[in-house]
Length: 484
Image (tube, rainbow, N blue to C red; front, side):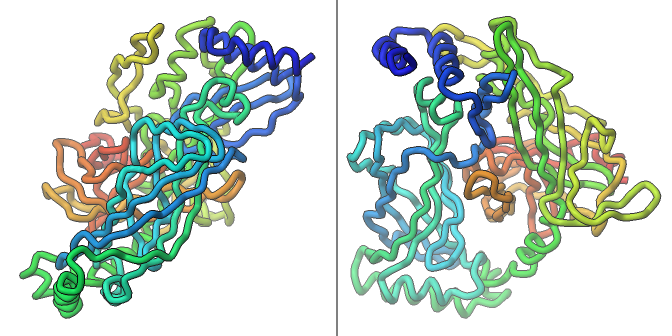
């Protein structure tokens, strides 16, 4: 019977409104499965609750989705400068089924084991089963400041080959039937890759010799030469990066928000995660989105705008836990070891300040032409959480936000490899410029960094709010009082 229904639905699927497609799909899945196991930001089927749709464009735990293979076509040397080397990679995907992809992001990227950052790609990428799809060219920049010496870069030019590795996360644009089958309204696939490949050097041997001359100059640069050349010589900021990895990372907190949207016919349990960090002994700063995620997402607002849907306030649960094992300091001065999540409902902390990000109207679909959502880019997209038990250890190193341009700012990204795996972080270095009360990042970051502190070599200056902006901590009026 289910098979007959499926055949009928598939024949007429595209003639139905999207809401009808979703509800019919839910009925079929309920008839077919009593329990659908889910992970982060996904469909949920639980006894008495039915299916749940995730509404947020947040990093989803990689699911068992039809994979695609990554093909590296070529890598060429673009330029060698006193502070960096630039490579251009041409690559593509060969999907095992037809796919539509909206966003491609890169993580854990390495070239000859040197860390590199690649900005995410936005667009509409339509891929056909079994057909090679070339992606836009990927520009890879290796800054000498990120490596202990220029020797690995010299080998790239001398040996004319590299080993490139990393992961591509593809956010899919799926139809409702696919979304139900994949247990997510925002399904994603994670594609790891590694390959040794020749490096093309335009200009041949003369260009190679010129590149080596620049690398020799960079290798010999000390502080005085670096200042004269306007460069960062290899290993110059090693102490800063070690401090980020060993000390400042201890201030990171993972905020988990669970809640339920209910309407006349079903309940939708939802799950959301975002970074935050300690800015005082008992205070954590987070984006306001971490405590009210439904107000920032068009999908949620579309759900809440019809079918008498509403947030079940009694279902809201917010917890926080450190990303690094640490002791917690109690009110009486005692400590308890291990990572035990703090809970809002149990009184471990409360929301002391809410910035109230401004609202904007956004187009959603042809039928829903305008929805009101809060702006992630708003300078008021922040909240301060006051904890009963504080953070033990040295406070977050804060710095004066004076300055207008930075050639490298450090942010943390939250990275997961598979469902149920512990989160880890990676440090990404980006340029940035001052933009009033915010920093405009010189390269786009993805949503895995939302809520991360932003560091200069002198200390923390801002918090990442969206793909392009971070709010200066000095512009938040209530911050000074909450650091005490």
